[in-house]
Length: 254
Image 1 (cartoon, rainbow, N blue to C red):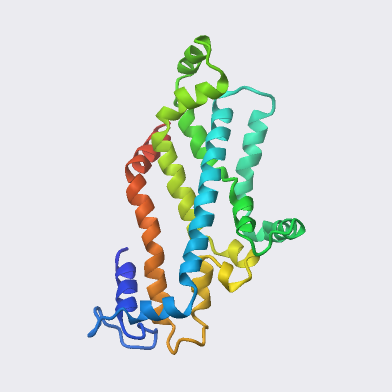
Image 2 (image 1 turned 90 degrees about the horizontal axis):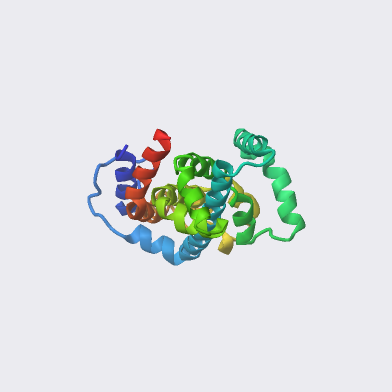
């Protein structure tokens, strides 16, 4: 599992990278940062990273908020059509993005969001998997605790923020990691709706390097950018790893 990551770093430090036709080496004879320097000087990599961070952060915040609210409503409220609504939401997981990509693009184009970060953010803010995980977690919160809060005079909003949310730390950790990873690594939808080179996300920008005439051998540039793109994912996981493990365990037990 770790070897491909190791090979990626080695290729990034190898002059010209390690192309598929070149001889393979476990460590370069003369390690250098020339690949990193060249690609960052000739391509708008910092802009790509900034675009990805903006899209991932905004989408993660919206997705987590929607998942928490919807999961709480589906787990603790009784209303007509709840089961049908929940089942219909789960059915959307079965539809691959290739089925919905054309109508989604037409909607985005009609409202004038093509080549805008919001064209990526808005269609992906509703995360059914996040809602499912939130609902499963909140089923484990005792109803008696919520009833006690309401008897004490707390409204639904105060009950949610003062009683439910303090126990949802592990759940938030799970939702943040899953949502951020999904948006940071998303490739197909950003490739469709983002057209200008300056507006690309890092996965889409990375794909343009393989056929870029600016590089005699693109593999060093590709591996250099790929190595940098792994760092935000590692940082997010290290920050939320404790909550992630607790949340997955709690959801599974429920």
